[in-house]
Image (cartoon, rainbow, N blue to C red; front, top):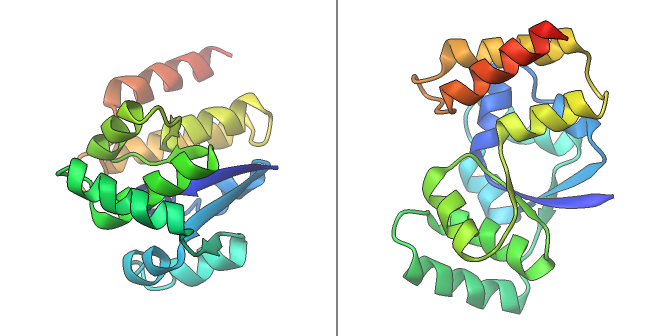
Length: 168
């Protein structure tokens, strides 16, 4: 079982297309700091309860993660405190960070932390035969419909995947 340190925005992407459950088909355990769960997973109203019911694991910070969070919060201007918490958890545990947040992805790159986002999760689901082509295409196309509103995903990457999947 692989562990993934989770930021909020990927969950919001899957919630927006009513597919919150599909990342849990992967053989991953998603971790999120308990305060981030309480303070960031507020909308839609049932998001927190649904994620916890699906298997999102609340974690406390170790002392090392706490001090690293403080360091990242001082070092990086744009990522939020909870973004820095997710990055510190990933760094200390040596696991992947799941986020779509641009500034957080850049910070993770500087800290040599592997990152996966919404599209990467969909790619792993489809590539690993956890979902069928139809569901993969549905998710990509639904994300395209809402992109630019409250969601920000790379349009060219989405379109490339739609075109490639349709050829299969």
